[in-house]
Length: 82
Image 1: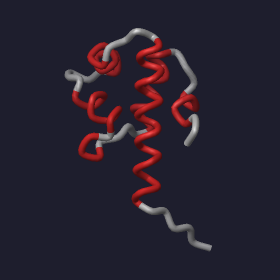
Image 2: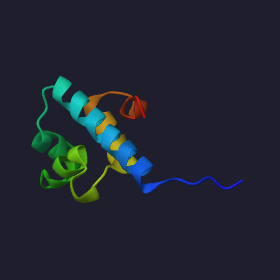
Image 3: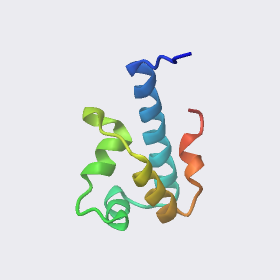
Image 4: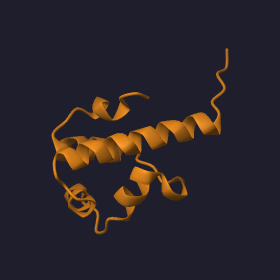
């Protein structure tokens, strides 16, 4: 049996994960720039765009792993309500 995954379904997942990253980043009082630098990025562009799913930019598993370590939370936290 082959599953069909719609683009709309995938977009909703990326949006929810971005919202969860933002929520937990803000709970720690960390700015987008601070998080970006801690992840090893030179600018805020990835975090800024992926939190809002701007131009379909989204976090990949490596990003989520790094963010979870920086924020000191479980990576599974980003999948709440997905």
